[in-house]
Amino acid sequence: MSSATVLNPVPIRPDAGPDRGEGGRRVRKRAYLRAVVLVDTGIIGLAMLGGFVTRFRGTEARGSDVPYALLAPALMAVWLISLRLQRCYDDRVVGYGADEYRRVVSATLRLAGAIAITGYIANVGVSRGFLGITFIVGTVALVAGRFGARKVLHRARLRGIGWSRRVLVVGDAAHILELVGTLRREPYAGYEVVGACIPDALLAPVPQRLGDVPVIGSFRSILEAAAGVDADTVAVTASKELTATRLRRLGWQLEGTGIDLVVAPTLTDVAGPRIHTTPVAGLPLIHVEAPEFRGARKIVKELVDRTLAAAALVAALPVLLVIALAIKIDSRGPVLFRQIRVGMDGREFGVYKFRTMVVNADTMLAELAARNETDGLLFKMRDDPRVTRVGRLLRRWSLDELPQLGNVLRGQMSLVGPRPPLPSEVARYDGDVARRLLVKPGMTGLWQVSGRSDLPWEDGIRLDLYYVENWSLASDLTILWKTVGAVLGSRGAY
Image (cartoon, rainbow, N blue to C red; front, side, top):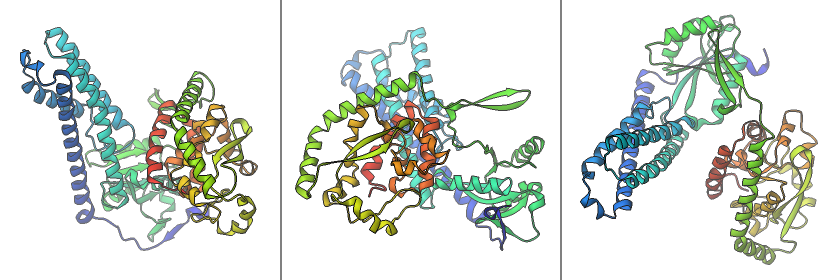
């Protein structure tokens, strides 16, 4: 066993028990779910009011045979029932992943379709304009409401007061540590690891820890261990001793306990659209599609990139002129800074930015190398003396990167992609990291919306590789939307 997986004997003090954890956790969960229901109810009511006012202007409905005053409460009740039937209030779905949004959209569209068909068959004279506006506005607003509620939940979790799941991890030492590290990279996701169960052969008679996770049992005592630390989720990761029969029996043992069983595959950083499960001879075989680096979707991405870049350049032209003038007034030197970066397939190109440093910044780098605040191959300083006064403002709001829209127009970059690396970085890439060069670098990306300069080097590389393997037009639009929030919040910008 490697030093990273050493079991350290320590006294165990469970950090939660029935008095402290379960009651409070259930209260927070119920409070959040009630809040989501109230938000949905308010949004549906406002959507119907907006649809009515927009369609009828408050006058035309008087001559209608349809009693809209009675129809509105009935439609609201049916809409909420539709959301519940689609399990939009299931605690396994609410607050986790994109499935919550898909269920909300699916429930709303199914209800809209059912009402349209019923109204046609029964020849009910409900205004189609009213229904169309109500459901279109309601769908968008419900998704936005869920997004806002989730952000509130994430902030509460980061402060330690939000509803989270207490997870008991089961597997061998190395895979437990890997899963724990993955879950802790995003603490706002709401999975708090409270203990571990390891193979019987590794369990010593004295209390132990894997890192800072207490080892509280073996594979023979999973149920008792989960109850002992008040876990509501058992996460099973890889171990040669966890056979299919043993895992199936564990599922039987957890029936009726209120404890969820989840299986964490060793296949990581692969997005859902590339994964398909096929039952073969009673086995759920997972098929993983190869990443797509060519084809029609890439052509569409290219067209979208260049179209949006051209529109953005035209719209931002007055801002570009003001920034150029401010740079000229603030310090001597050119307005634009050109630097060689490496693009797709290892091709070098000149990336353009507004100059944010003094003209001799490169010659000063050796003197500042010892003050580097990041790991890996990058140099970053929060208070870099080379940055000009205007440059600090430009970096804070990422305005220095606007000239890269020209690189996008020329086909050298994409709006969304991995961070464009320097040739000196690429020279030290190993085989895995070099996969970043399979797609065009981007003006923004997962690294931009996940912390920017505050991200450790390894996390930045992991996010870039995840994007390369799992990109899609939908994810690009999501990242562009999140970039607005990241820029306005100035997170990790220096």
